[in-house]
Length: 439
Image (tube, rainbow, N blue to C red; front, side, top):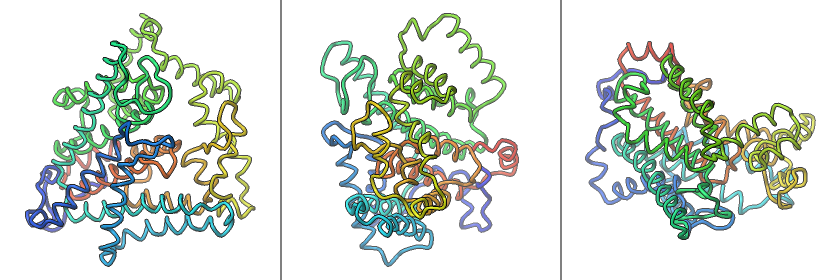
């Protein structure tokens, strides 16, 4: 929040009402302006959701592909309006192209153009955002609707399970009792999307409130939203949700939170609630945490195979990280991360693993990785050493760059940064945030 600064000119001193300000009247007067407005809202909504009829076996969302194609077309039509900040996106695209120089035989142009669609869509959205096409009030409403929609869909899925009906919007894998995906392909994806949406909403509320968000006082005002968020996170059956939820709550850490949180955990342990409720996700988190401490891949695989598939590529990356080799800097080639499927038992051969870290560094090289970090820092982060940075790195490390989740995270953090930088915060709040740099 230190990046929130007082504007120097009356024109830009929008006060705190910037988060709830309306779109400039002239922007929606034209058909082009209205179209851009709805397209920007659609980008956020479609990047945050997935529907069973629109997701392929490779988890590619056809609705996302469609709206990216439209956004890319609009961006190309207005390429002459390119802004200085957009150069960082083009540098990232060129860095990915460097992989062609070292491994042309493995370079897949389809993957490159898919990456280009994500990058150009992001640049189009940021250009429209900085033109004032999206108001803070509309943005908050979108975030609320996403959380409520995940809650409602999960509730409907749980009802389908109880009634032994076909599960509504079930997308991938085999149905498991109370391990449900809600509005994303997998429960772990839902956990990431909900956390980043709730985090973005809290930041917007702080801009309105002019002070650090207080979990109990301000949370009571948003109690309906918090109930939907916590219910979905705790009952979707995702181990990722049980890991990310405490991490997210660390942002609100205070004496009272420690006290009441400690009492709640002690009661759960004393009453053995996880065992009585058969919360398998909680058990998996416990067993896998113990296995990670041993440092043995076999122990991790035995404790939780799904979590091991995300963690073990980092374990094996050290054997390929050789700074003296050109591949370390320019990449071993696209799909080189498929080597992890040969090292990790129980994974189909030829399946690429590892997400952005370490697979992006392995495939495209450290140079491209540095440009990606520069891109994230420029568009999404107010400060490099902040809670937002920690949350971003943890949530995207196991996601591939050519998937919608990391780009949703970039979109929401970039939108937050835009509203933060345009807000006028009173000095008292700025001093408080310096003592507690939770952003």
